[in-house]
Structure formats: C-alpha cells, structure tokens
Length: 199
Image (cartoon, rainbow, N blue to C red):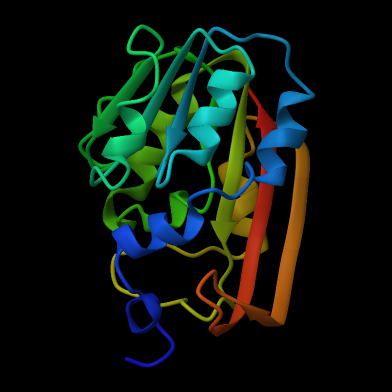
C-alpha cells in the first residue's frame, strides 16, 4: 500500500548502511547533559551502533544494544566485550530487567513495537529505568505518512502524553513536517514526538 512504512522500506541492513558514520542523534546528546549517572544504558533498535558507540565514549560502564537482526556485527566485534552486549531480539521477546538502566535510548524505535504488544512492552521499558533514569526517543503521531502501517503503533499527542504520565517530561517536541524526507531521500510527512523523560 503506497504511503505505508513497507512501501518505503529497503531493509534494515540498507538502513544501517545509510546510518553508518553519522553522528549520534542530537536528542541523545542533549539528554546526556541532563544526567550524571554512567552505569548502564540500553540502545533500542541500535542499527549501525552509532549511538551505542557514543554511549561507550561517554563513559557508560555497560551498554546493551538491542536489535532484531545483527546488521552491525562487524562493528559490534570492535567494541570492548567487558562493557558491551549485542542482544539480537525483538522488543516483544526481550526480557527487560527492572530498574537497570540510567538511559534507555530509543531513537525511532518505539513505533516498531507490534500494537497488540505495545502496552506490555512499553510498560517494561519504563520499568527498566532506574529512579532518575532517562527515556530518550520518539513516538510517531497519527498524521505521519506511515500511520496505519501493519506492525507499527501511532499516537495522538494526547495519547502520547498519557503514556508518559508517570514520568517527568523534560522535553516533548512535536515535529509535524509535511515537506520532509526519509534517510534515503524519499518525501515524507514526519509527525513525531521527540521525548526526554525522567523516571
């Protein structure tokens, strides 16, 4: 169906290849200015591992990169095994530990949780934050080009804010740009909520 995510999608390996070598996501860079703890972080939908590498460089003692496919295995093999774990799993199947992470980095990852499992998985992600820990990432809005794509979840601004009601919102930036593009250069209406929230 034209306009859905799958109409645009070229595969996760292609996406990781396009992302390789890019700087860390600005939202993550901003978030790390708001927290001093550097014990443990998890990078959801880690892709090319750019953000995972940045977390290691910023002094986190332990970084877990979670992805459904090992699209950056060669890069992962260069990271210090004593501080880095490359976990290959869907979000739905991953056993999120409770109160384990100072930072949960979810850059353009949360929308790919299956809608039927989203409440359970999102609750587990929130619970995996330590007290004072930060959730950093995006939810997609209901006006996004990909809204209605199978296997993805979308939210109104009201429902997105409600999901975060038990966290302290430090940033909630609304992107509603009908004249933007995807990473591969295709035109796209991005409707997204960029979030930094503290447990």
